[in-house]
Length: 438
Ligand code: AMP
Ligand code: GLY
Image 1 (cartoon, protein in one colour):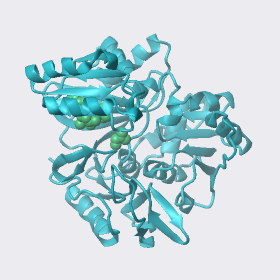
Image 2 (cartoon, rainbow, N blue to C red; image 1 turned 90 degrees about the horizontal axis):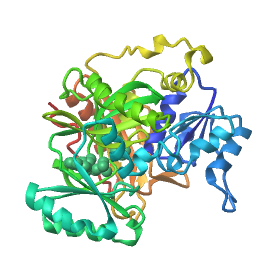
Image 3 (spheres, rainbow, N blue to C red; image 1 turned 30 degrees about the horizontal axis):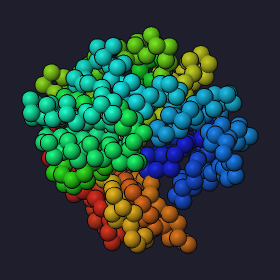
């Protein structure tokens, strides 16, 4: 099959790397361009989509993909999904891994997600939905006075900048000011006021098709910028998988309490979810409670999951997309993993100077050796640009250094030895990813 991966961050680099190893792949394409993905094989092409003249980019992309003979698309980020990419590729009879625009609302609208959870009886934080015009600040003050904390969320997509855990009047005022800023106005038309959950956070990933959910596993992401979970929220500064502190039957619990009722309720609304589902969880004393749904893989969670899992994700995704009798892959075998039972995988994100607020004043060169094959490890690249022969740390999260080992101590020691060896001036990273996991 000819497969196109949409997106050009480190998550998509990991997906390309993984799909490249699938038995179903003939040619790999990517869009948009990245200066590093070609390194995964000469058959990685980019699509040039210049001169759009105001056309819907995804319908244009789908026509182009058809011309190039693309059979299947795997979508990395949420934006194309929310913009209706699935419909555009479906119109061209191209298999598409990612939900429809309607189903993508699970991530695109927190109000929609909360309402579905309520209807399905899925455990989640108690909440109230308030229009920004109705001044949610007053309500929020009352919550803090009564319960000591409240979580305020912009309902729309806010690129990780729409959630505030508030413990004081000052926190609420700061959140309110942010919601009122011009760039947030659209996302914060509706505000969700939520109970502050207490527990340990992790994420669950599954390949979903209609009523079928194929578990991929759990991972933990480090969302805060600084060591000790201090500082501002980011897209994620590191991750590990599996999650040893979860109860033994965590997968069954999540499937029964969350996935089954969710998919049933979506079906009631005539929504057929097809794609990766990311369930952000707080594991509380009462069990899992959903913090959020995302309609895609996490970044950097995808990097550790891809590297950790020895199954053929290309076949797994194709099997989820097509009923078995169609593709004849007979894939019981690929469902089985052969990896060592005590294997763990750790990913450390290295970001550009100024992350998460600013772009770097100076784009430092990234050591070419960082692009080598590390055997038990791999570096996936995101915010890089090419400057002549050199790769430079251009913006945001530049790369994720991923290593596996037989213990978290071993995997993180290997990952950090690469980070320390190749660190560039101004690089931003945490030193405590996957430290003392128990
Ligand atoms: P989100 O953008 O929904 O992933 O939220 C960002 C972060 O805010 C989450 O990863 C949690 O750490 C925190 N958070 C969100 N909702 C809650 C909640 N109801 N209780 C406690 N923490 C929360
Ligand atoms: N790492 C969090 C996310 O991908 O949303």
